[in-house]
Length: 322
Picture (tube, rainbow, N blue to C red):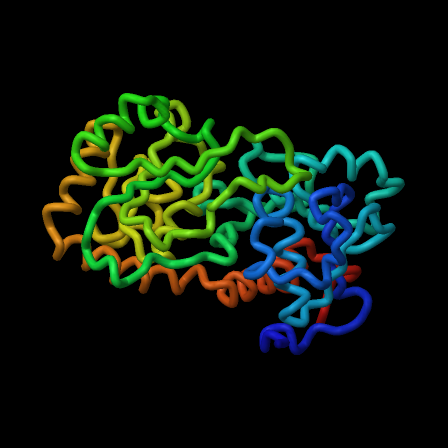
């Protein structure tokens, strides 16, 4: 369905290219046949989330976009930071190009014309905040579970989990309290592949999400709030680190429980288990907050940035759409 904010876009000058030179993880599939909700396993790494999924969702909304494996001679090009050097190696002249880097978890890229960043802290004159897509194909928590707290999960890369929660002692602490630790981790080994063992979309039996990063990364300016977005969407209370990406979204105590250690995380789990009203209120609040990160809302944000804010800021007739 064509998004109404795209109705005024037309002409070759409106086309935005998304650079995806490596496509091994597609296993021969035509990108135009992909459905993020059905083919959620494809979108498990930064490049495939920020480049391919954005292209797929914008194309489905009727946006003038194309997926390219080589740099075009002109126009706006969106590239993931991990592939920026490769793109530059193909550029003959930058005069007719506007290069937009999806920064993801990488440091700022000063060679880009503009950047897309994952939280408001990283935004600036030439850097635009667009939230990460929430987990596609997400299976929400089974409402029939009520307020029971039995299964506690972490969903993400092992390197982003506090070592105390990656230890056997943590799992044993939970087990001694009648709780199950569901650690769904990967060891990242590259962007252009599918991590088939993932169950990152399935929250059906998850009662609490714990996302405590190592303390050294709490002040990182590049991290997203994706784990919180996913918990809200799934109808699961979240216990998270004291990070800027979470704090800038916080409106009330019901948004999440903030902790700094395994001991505090355990206390948070017990608080949810002992207070059904708190549990219910956090679920209800989270489902409402999740509406701000629905795919159609993020499509609208991408549309505004790519076809209004960047052209206006660039001040270039080459990319002016009206």
